[in-house]
Image (cartoon, rainbow, N blue to C red):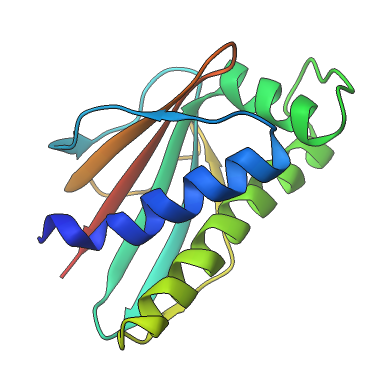
Length: 151
């Protein structure tokens, strides 16, 4: 797995978060880690096919997802990840992945993406896999992990 595969997702995530959440995220350290379910975590999974196949998973604590969705909705406070909240966090993943696939296309790498799937702890059917991971740190909100698994 090449480290440059995560760059379009990182670039896109930073841009989309700045636009919809009104925060400039900082970047944590790039690394390889096992993607495993964690308590109170939400994953936004997008499958990819084309030039390479695999998936990108955006992982975040449910409390972080609620703060992001609240910011996306102009400060309307959500206290639980209901259908509206899941739809909003799903759209965030869709926007990030769509922009990333455009960046890849502009580099001559054609990738098709699936609609996002929101997975809450307890609904997990993702296999444990190694992923190239980089966290985005959003002051006052929390951390969003970008996890790319491609072959």
